[in-house]
Structures are given as structure tokens and as C-alpha cells.
Image (cartoon, rainbow, N blue to C red):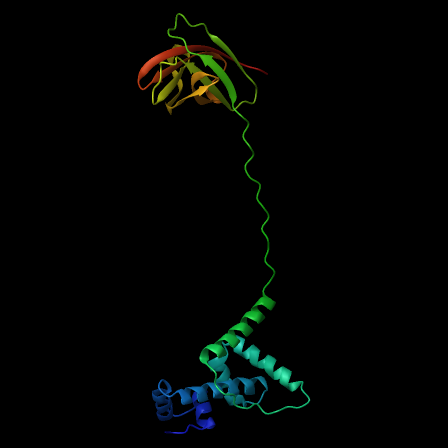
Length: 246
């Protein structure tokens, strides 16, 4: 088995070995665990030598060209060199036994994360945005359904100023039960000013009642007629006289 010297491994890492020597190392690297461990140890020695300023200018330039992007390892090596330099007894950097690639990677990663956390700015908590303003409740009107135009007297409805919607609650005959209902509001000359479909009925205060919301903009002061149908069947009419309070 070929014994690789520290100098040969160092030249390979710095890219200054011959092409033949580099090919021999790379051919053995994947199957020779001892060579892989020796190469990683030599790499650690280079990081330490760079941190302590022990590399010649040409070697330092080649080292930074290859490893300058590994800022985490460089910072870790500098921190380690600073601690050992402060000691009263300075021992030469000795070759360490290789434990595992995963262990070394974990140490480098932790060092990089530590420096990143120290340099990262404090997170900015966004200010809560105000939600939409609550809508005022609809103005409710309860109406009794007539069976014919002639028999039904007009119901006067006074709408308060500032109202955005009018909820009409129409009481039905208990026998007029349908799955769906529709309403139609007609103004002058029998012109349709609003219509609503796909409505359902519910029992309110003991009465079968169908409800709908009409925009207040569809109800200027005047006379109207509200027609109600149940699944295509005319159920009745409610004449209305709309006024607005100041």
C-alpha cells in the first residue's frame, strides 16, 4: 500500500500536485478509508495554518481560492486558533484521529449557524392591519301577503337615513310550503327594480316566513309592489309606500 506523505496530500489539496499524483489519489480515495481520513486531517491542518498565518503567500492564495467560500469553517478555525493562542502553553497543532464525516460536518454547521444568528438582525413584528369596518344591520320590515292587488291596502314603510339594506320578512299562508321561493319588486309602470331567487322559508314567531335583503338604493321614496312566488306559483302581492326619514 502506498504511504502518502503530508506534503503530497497538502499539494493535492492546494491543487499544486502533478496530474499523475492527483489521479492516483483520486483513484484510491473512494475505496481507501485510511487515505480519506488522512486527507481530511491534512485539510484541517491547512485551515488551522491559514488561521494562524503560517501559510506562505502563494500557498495562502491557492488555499483561499479553493476554500475561501467555506466561511463557517474559516471562522471556526480562527476562533479555535484564538483560544489556543491565549493559553500559556501553546502546543503544536497535532493530527487528530478521524471520527466521522458526519461529526465534522455537524461541528462546522453548528459554528456557521452560531455566527449567522449573532449577525442576523432581530425580526420585525408586522403591525396588525385594521379589519374592515363592521356593516350596520339591515332595517327589517315585516309584511303580510295579500292574495290580490285590489284587496290589499298599501303598507307604509319609513326607512331611516343611512340605511344600506332593507330586510323584508313576508309572512305566508302555512299551506304555501315550497322548496324554493322568489321575490320581485316593481315600481312605477310595473317596472322591475329588484328581484331575488333561490330563497327558503322558515318559521318565525309561529309564522311561515320568507325573507330577503334589498339594497336601499333600489328603494327611493315612492310606491312599489312586492310579488312572491313559490316554485313558479304566484302566492300574492304586497303594495308598499316607501318614505325616508331625514
